[in-house]
Length: 222
Image (cartoon, rainbow, N blue to C red; front, side, top):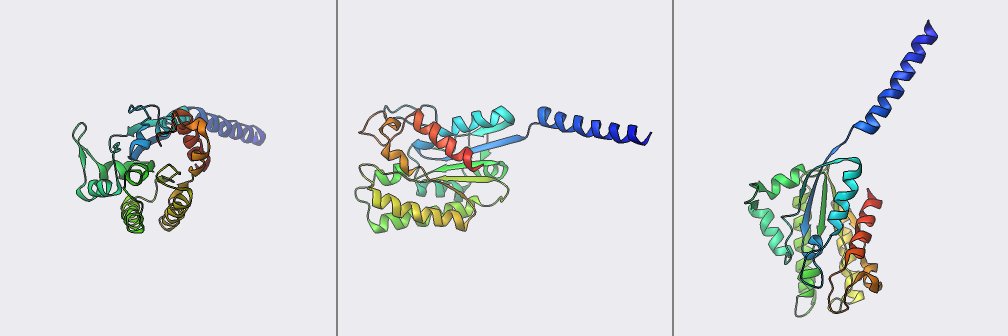
C-alpha cells in the first residue's frame, strides 16, 4: 500500500510538471524606447523588421506577449526628448497609456538611443558627449523604478560621423551606467565592421540581418 501511495505521488508530480511546462505561459509586456534603430528604420526611409520585432517573436514561442508597446519610440528621438517624455509622463493618445504606466508594467524594456542624436551633430565635441551621457544617466535612473524588469541598453557603433575611438569611449561610459543601475549592456559595436549588415554605405541604418543579430545578442543575455 505504501509503495502504491509513493508511486501515485510520483506520477502526480510528474504530470504536474509536464502540465506546467506545456500549458503554462508567462505574460510578458515589452516596451521599446529609442530612435529609428528601435523602430527598424532603413536607409530607404521606411520602417522594416526591427530587433524588437524579432525579440517579440522569440517570446511568443514560449510566452504570451500581453502588450508590445513601440509607440514611445520615435525616429528622431534624442536623450533630451526622451527625458522630457519621462519628466512630463507623456501619454499615448491612441490608448491613453502613460509612459510611466507602461514602464512600470514592463517585463522587458529595450533602449536604443544615440545613433540619431550623435550622428546629426555638427561636431562630436566633449561637451556634446558629456551632455548625452548626463542625460542618459537621468533616463536610466528614472527607468529603474521597477527592479523586477529586464532593461537592455544597446551600445553605439561607428559611422562616418562617429569614429571608432569615439564610439569606444562613449560605449565605455554607457557600460559604467549599466553597471551602476543594474542594466544589461548589449555591445553591438561590431556591426560597423560587417558590410552585410547595411543596405548602403551612405547610411548608418542597418538592415534586417543586423536587427536579427541584435535580437540574438539580447536573447543570449536573458
